[in-house]
Image (cartoon, rainbow over all chains, first blue to last red; front, top):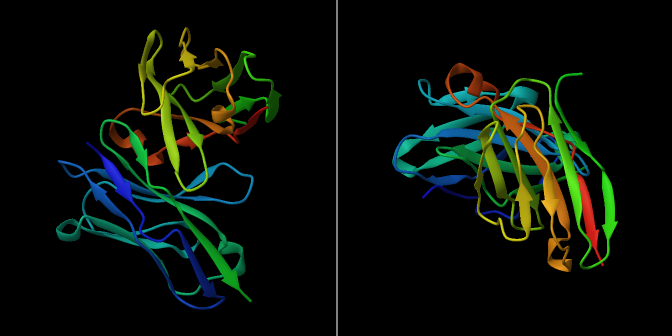
Length: 110
Length: 116
């Protein structure tokens, strides 16, 4: 069965610092992998996706993610965080259905 | 504007009442689904549909019904509301396969439901 874990419930970083949000998945085959962002009171917006090919994918808002098959991971990174990045981030896979992780809430200190 | 439209945005129900959450998309997506979002639990799939006339259960289907009579609409019915159904509900749609899946899911803006 598909599953997604996000080990960090809440992360706080200072503005301008680098960011890495962790995501691990479980699926028999190579899944489609996604990262979504949800601002307070809003729906979910797609940040980036991985299907195949280059394991480092670029997304919107300066985010990138790296697929590591050996670690079953798809971690999200950003070199310099902005205050507007404060939100909840969800990792998701698509195999037979979309399955979402529990989310990581990001707080940004000024 | 193309996208997924959910109504209502907010709703308060009394225990035992029934209601229907509406979801419509104008992108000709085959796949539509309903999720509920609860703190610390991410999004959990309630029901989904891969096309008109086809529906199936997700992770947490109990207490909810769906139907898909058209490609565009996918309403979610609460048969007898319970406080445990207090949540934020999201409808989403997608192409099923191929390069269109590049766009992932398109989400509605959500319905915040409180059952008292």
